[in-house]
Image 1 (tube, helix red, strand yellow):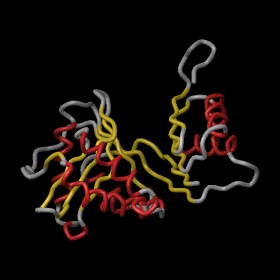
Image 2 (cartoon, rainbow, N blue to C red; image 1 turned 120 degrees about the vertical axis):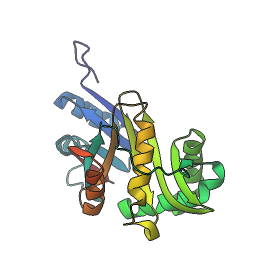
Image 3 (cartoon, rainbow, N blue to C red; image 1 turned 60 degrees about the horizontal axis):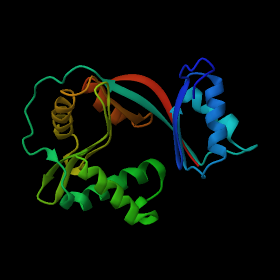
Length: 226
């Protein structure tokens, strides 16, 4: 969305998921109007105050989202301090797909209450396989047993966005997750200025995990599930 002077006022991805960043009320109203005329979305994500305004333009009278999930935007710009390396950490391969998608499905269920392996098992696996083929998934495996994974969703010289950070339940609290994330972060920060991610507000243990690793809080966002 640009104003009459062609100045950028907002950017949005509008489809089954809606993600947006807007700098004016007109941009928010415009994005909501486009979203109302498109396919029925299942998720809306944006900065907390902007999401509240978007919803007023988008929702029918009295309509409420199925679930509201407040999240924190976290970031790190400094290189990670040297610590013991994890030589077995590597990019995922196609043969790693099944344990990875099962771990990711568990994370989706925990966040949204929907099991993607039941709702869309073929599409979910295909999308994740494309991510693996693009060298966007880092894993630590013990034979066929997944210990750690991290997904790189977007990677640019200015910022890299990660999500889907998973540590096997049997390995939590032992420092493995910190070692793996720091090792991956060192590789990513060789090619980007910052690493960004989101964490649910209620997940205090995970927030503490990232704060201990030197991430800071850059903003407050909302996830709305329809």
